[in-house]
Image (cartoon, rainbow, N blue to C red; front, side, top):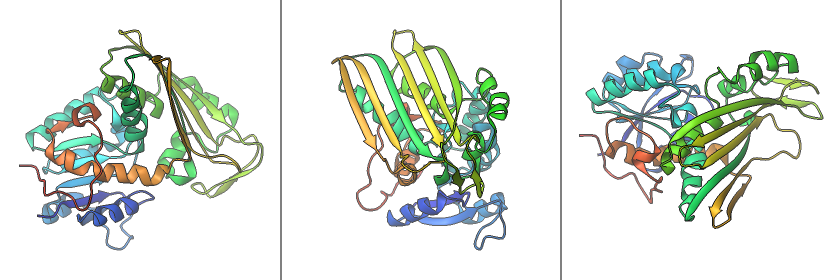
Length: 328
């Protein structure tokens, strides 16, 4: 029996997810999008879900659980599991506690699961956790990841302050770091700490604007960002744990100038003294989509409710087609 997949959102990411689902032998039975003019798409999710009966939804619209609460509840209330590439969804257990508890309750009542995957999970949680597995003792973890906001959509662009002046960034973003919602670095760092088995005692984050020395064009905003205009944001999260291990993770998301490129670098300090992993120019878009699609069989075979990386373990490559797995 073919795995039936619905896609919620038809922007930059889900068309790629659709391609990967079809390559694995899945069936894309439904696409929901807020733009009803897109051919073959619908805005009436509840009616369409009842008619098509998908097993799982790939949700690729916004970045925070608050923004995704309604579509997630729409799915799980109908018994449809959800995998989302929203960055906060990687580990929202403390940052969106009330929403997680509500989703968890409805999902369990309808035998559905909700999971946050994509680049923010595999590159920032699963991968460094695997590297740490080669250490006898971990005292400190330091990570740095850079990505081009032009490769993503308007939600990510907005969250990174692209197009703001320095004063606007300070007023709207930097000054709100202690009370703002979690940055991508925050969610990933806390998720990594949880996956490694550490007990978090304190977390802090800070935001700084990024600028280019030359004008750069933002594909998402469809405008040129002049010198002195914010091209994105550098966010740093610091995690202190009861075990004494510190995790420091920085993300830089910006409109790239000539010569800029993606990276995903990690250093594990302890015993041995240092283990280094460097990924120059990782294919962030493709791996975001592929990791979410590869998680589908694990999600369908896993426990109901809101689950995280620690619940499912490493992402498994699917050789050939999806296995025939459905929630029972």
